[in-house]
Structure formats: C-alpha cells, structure tokens
Amino acid sequence: MRTKIYVGNLPYSVTDATMESNFAEFGSVSSAKVMMDRETGRSKGFGFVEMASAEDAQAAINALDGMSVDGRSITVNLARPREEGRGPGGYGADGFKAAKRADVGYGNGGYGGGRY
Image (cartoon, rainbow, N blue to C red; front, side, top):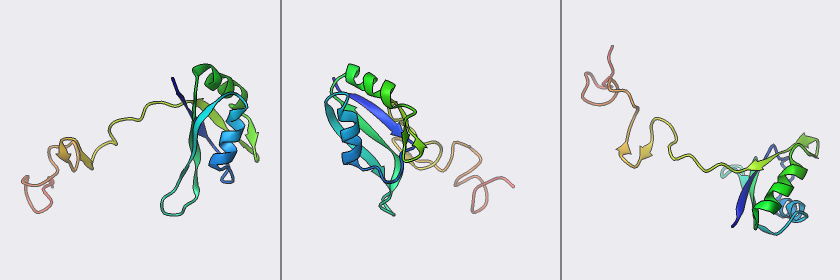
C-alpha cells in the first residue's frame, strides 16, 4: 500500500528529482511532485511524495521533518485527504451557489437581490 507524504516550506530551488532522491534514502519512492503555479511556472513551496510502504514513509518523516534545506526548515508529515468543498460560492455538485445565505441572490428584491 502506498503512503502519501506532504512536504511543506520547500525552497523554490527544489525539483521533483531532488525531492525523489532525498526520500529514496529511506525506501522505494513511487512518485515525487513539487506543486507549481500555473501562471508563473514557479514552485508553490510544497509537494507530495508517495512511498511504497508505510514503514518507509514513517522513517522518512522522522528523519526529514524540521530539517534545514537551503535555510528553510521543511515540514514533512502524512498527507491528509483532500477536502470536498471549497467553501461558499462556486460550482458544486448541487449547482452554482452564490452563497449559503437566503437573503442574497435573484428574486429577493431589486437587481442584486440583497436586503437594504
């Protein structure tokens, strides 16, 4: 079973390859990905590593959490599952919602619909 690890506070110089080689010291690495900003192409300062076993992942977490990389103390821990919702607004499974408030939206008075 693969175990996913979150790696945060990464310096912008870290790449997928360097992250993979650093974690490979502790066991088999399935994947290593530094998250990049779509618009700038620059690192967002965090990434994820998948390791082949939970024991290898725990060994890497114990050894690397708090380690200084290019002057930055990195955070290494088990990745949490992605949260479903992104808060109020946006397009969700039940359609587009402007907000969770009943007094905002169309049909509640005026062009904007809000109470004045």
